Image (cartoon, rainbow, N blue to C red; front, side, top):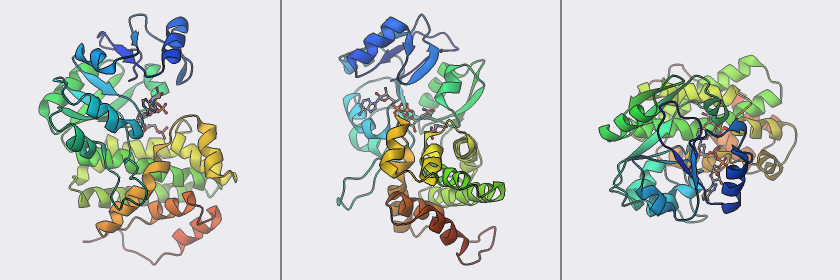
Length: 322
Ligand SMILES: NC(=O)c1ccc[n+]([C@@H]2O[C@H](COP(=O)([O-])OP(=O)(O)OC[C@H]3O[C@@H](n4cnc5c(N)ncnc54)[C@H](O)[C@@H]3O)[C@@H](O)[C@H]2O)c1
Ligand SMILES: O=P(O)(O)OC[C@H](O)CO
């Protein structure tokens, strides 16, 4: 769990799994590995060891791990009686050859912690900027009004605006799919294909994201909000994005393992692209940009060929009609 400066002045404890990292943060009052250059607030408590014991003392739990760790944390925290929100944006990677789909966060929660009052805190938000107190707008998404209310009360402040949304599916699809699309836009920019191409990818990417979301029961308005177009624009165009940087590095000729290794942080789009496409296919939803990203990531397509593939598609009408 991660946190830094808090506008509303709550008592915050940051629990981390790695004892050495906690000791380093305690000694330096800085998270050198994950958030360098941001002094930790004096009143931020640091904890390690028994996560469940730590969680028992809290009024609100925030899970700030990659998707890969969410299932185990939700299982651990399943009986906690307080609201919980995850920051993860993506699909859980499905076990190879399992024949099953990777899940969104709320679907994992329904499996392993159905009684938790939970939701997502999402929207366009580079951690570095949030930690520096730069103005940011987020979305608090949950099916539970009490969770939305608690998140808004806890985080809304001078530098953070928090909008409530009960369309958790839409918010999670926005967060997961924008990471895949940002890889495509990073590639496009890395190949210097121009601003027209970038705008086209973002716009057509938004159409893909919306189609998948609607097929899964989301509302179209969500994709015109912060968790949809807002986060897509930020992640596709901001060089702080790890997903965009994967695309930029692939365009420079790096292999995927090289690109991923050089980030030092997780780029969820790399792990979510395959599932996004699998789920779209199963629903009869077309996602040509995401399909192209999967082919690239799997090494079945070279960057230049990927662009040609997208340009050679059959002409379409815009807007599309059902
Ligand atoms: N970094 C951002 O700007 C940002 C903003 C909004 C949302 N997110 C989302 O939040 C999630 C986490 O992103 P991040 O950038 O903080 O990732 P990260 O790679 O920086 O890791 C975050 C923390 O999770 C811990 N962690 C990693 N794997 C773990 C595991 N298996 N068990 C326990 N702890 C583990 C790491 O040690 C670290 O402390 C992602 O899904 C990301 O899409 C990130
Ligand atoms: O660095 P990225 O690409 O994981 O993006 C971080 C946040 O999700 C942006 O909102």
